[in-house]
Length: 152
Image (cartoon, rainbow, N blue to C red; front, top):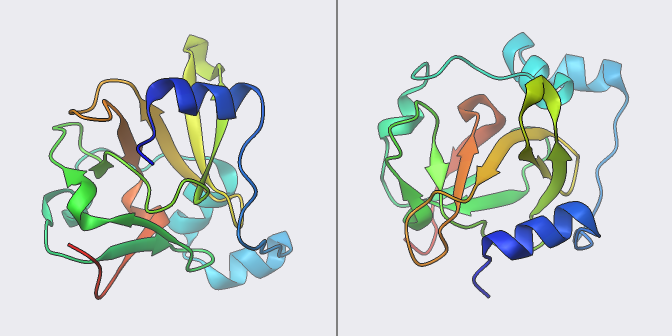
């Protein structure tokens, strides 16, 4: 199924899909596992500086997983150059890979994306992406890790 903006809003406002599994760790366990920057972004809802990662310009076939729990999130075939300074995708690998949360921080109205398995902050999704979905999943590169393979 192709997710569209109204699907994202419905999940953010009403109910996200159930994940395939859940991963829960203590704050100390996350800090021991992650680099300081990964911890700041994924566990404290931070944002990396734009254009700070080579991942923005990498377009080889493969899959992207959550840096915290290894859940597959995106296929490189859905990656595109958005010019924003963060890796951008048009669709998650599965409908239930991502959870959506309404975010009204900093005087803006946005939809936060988190890993549906471990609740790691990934970034935000916007309705200004390319067709056919019109979605732009604007992700923090440090929240993702590239893994080999994929349908790309």
